[in-house]
Length: 118
Length: 118
Image 1 (tube, rainbow over the protein chains, first blue to last red):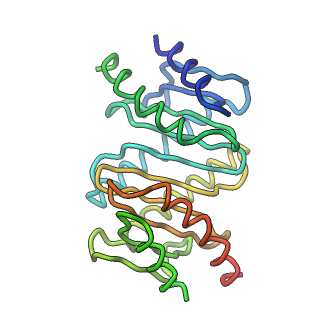
Image 2 (cartoon, rainbow over the protein chains, first blue to last red; image 1 turned 180 degrees about the vertical axis):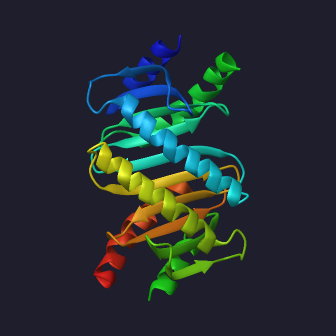
Image 3 (cartoon, rainbow over the protein chains, first blue to last red; image 1 turned 60 degrees about the horizontal axis):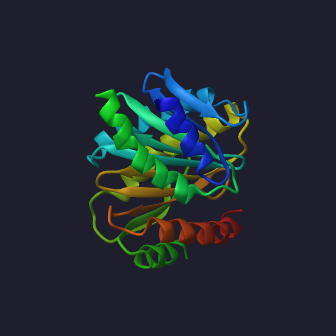
């Protein structure tokens, strides 16, 4: 059920490239990608490391749980949403894509996935 | 000139908490904070480490220059904008604050600061 939801999400965002449900250990549960490159699994793995750093920083700053991360580079924007203590969602969008819609769809999707994962 | 611009930016965002211009080495150039806590200098330092990781990841992914980062935790949202190779801007906003306006103002402010810094 994860794969089809991921596909639906990517296709519902203008400029959507790929989405992945991944463990904080960098192991993917499921993914969908419109194009093979850039590889969403490698993006997820790289950003799982950063997300762990963000969690540590949030703890250090006593700033509450890390909920969301958005990383914008020249060629790609990636929205990351923490689903549970063990899993996160990432959605990669092309530079001209709709980041607002991407954020919104992940906010809706995260609790749906949480139910399945816990 | 940086301090007054940072103050103006914080005050122009609903829910704005603090802003800082900082080197990637974690040393602040100038900052403004409405309240002493959470400490924007410590936030900046923590996120400078994360931003360096993001840069490395962007390079690894051949995804172009890192431009912007948004980190949302339960108690605080922080928008980070790369200004030059050496400096970045961070703007912290309360959870009910206007992240869209914060992003917009940093996008406008970054090139202004870049001119002064290069």
